[in-house]
Amino acid sequence: MSDKPTAVRVYLARVRTALADLPASEIEEILDDVRPHLAELEAELGEGARVEALIERLGTPESYAAELRASGGYPPAAEGATQVLPAKTAPSLVKPRIAFWGLLVCAVALALFAFGAAVNLDPGDLLGAVLFLPVFLVSLFFLLSGGTEPVLALPEVGWLRRTLAKGREQEDSGKALSYLASLKPAWWVVCALVLVAFGLLLMLRSRSAVLLLPFLLVAGGAAVWAGPRLRRDRRLLWVAVPVSAFVIGGMLGGFAAAVDLISHRNSYANMPSYYQSSDRYGNDQLTYGGREIENVYAFDGEGKPLTEVYLYDEEGRPITLTRYGCERSSGTKEKIGADNRFPRPRIEQGVTDDQGNYNGYNGYRSACREDASVPFSAAIPKVTAPPTSPTAPTSSTAPATPTPTR
Image (cartoon, rainbow, N blue to C red):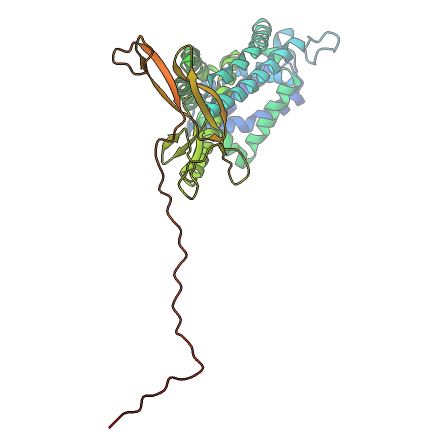
C-alpha cells in the first residue's frame, strides 16, 4: 500500500494550516464535518485525483477555510483572534440578513409568478414580480457593499450548510445529492432553454410578451455564465438562485397546464355534440354538429310556429344566447343583449337606394332590417297508436256441423 498522501489529505492539511489560529478541538470538529464531503468528491473525480481537481471544484484551501470560518461564526484569520468576537463588538447582522432573506423572498416570488404565468399562458401574471424588484435591489446592494462573508456567517446559513453536510453523510441522500451535483453543468443550459421556450410560448398567446423575451434571453445567458463560477464567487448566487427558482416554477406550471389540458380534452371528448360555447364576441352560444346556432324555432303538433318560447335545460337553467338587432345609426348588425326567448327576428343586411328602397339596384347606403317571419315550414310527423293484434270471435255455441246429403 502506497504511503503517498491522497488529494483529500493534502487539501485538508492546507485547510488545517489556514485555521491554525483556532482552538485545536474546534479545528478537528470543523475538519470532521467536511472530510466526508471531500472524500465523496474525490471518489467522484476518480482514482488518482489531484489536488488541482479539488481546487477547481471547491476553490483554494485557504478560500475554503475562510468559508468555514464564516459559516461557523469565527473571525477572519487576519485579525489573529482565537475566539469569537464579543457580542458588543460583533458586527451587525441586519444587512447580511436582509441580503440573504431578500434573495430567498425574491426567489420564492419569482417561482410563484412563473408558475401562474405557465398555467394560464398569460404574460400579465408576471407583472406582480416588479413589486419585488426593490427588495432584490436592496438585497444585492447589501451583498455588494458587505461581501459574502457576513452572509455566510449568519446562523441560519450555518444551519443550512450543516444540514446539507449531514445529508451527504447519509448513504441514500448522499448519493442523491452527488447525482444532483453531477447535473449542475447541464442544469444551466436547461435553464436557458426553458427561459427561451417560455418566452416563445407566451408570445403565441399574447403579442405583448415580445417585450418580455429580451429579459428572458438575458436571464438565460446570465445563468449559463454564472452557474459554473459559483464555486469561486458566491455573489453569483444572487443571479443563479432567482433564475433557477423562476425556471422550476415555470416547469411545474407547465406540467400542471399539460395535466389540466389532457383532463379537459378527455372530458370534452365525452360531451354530447350539443353544448354551450362562445361566439366571436365572447358571449354564450350554442353549437350543434360543429355549427353555431343563433336562433331556435318551435312548432306545435299541428305544425304551427310558436312565439314567446323560453328555453331551459334539465336543471332549470335558462339557455341564454346573444340577441342581435339593427343599429340604426350605422345600419349594421349589433349585439343588443342576451336572453332565452325564442324565436328571434332574422337580421338582414344590405343597401338602400336614394329613395330608401332596400337592396336597390343602385344602392349605396348600408342598411339593416329585422324579419320576424319564420323562414320555413315544418312537417310534424304524426304519431299513431301501434296496431293491436286481431282477436278471434268467441261464441258459447259451437257452429252446427252440416249433414251430408245423399
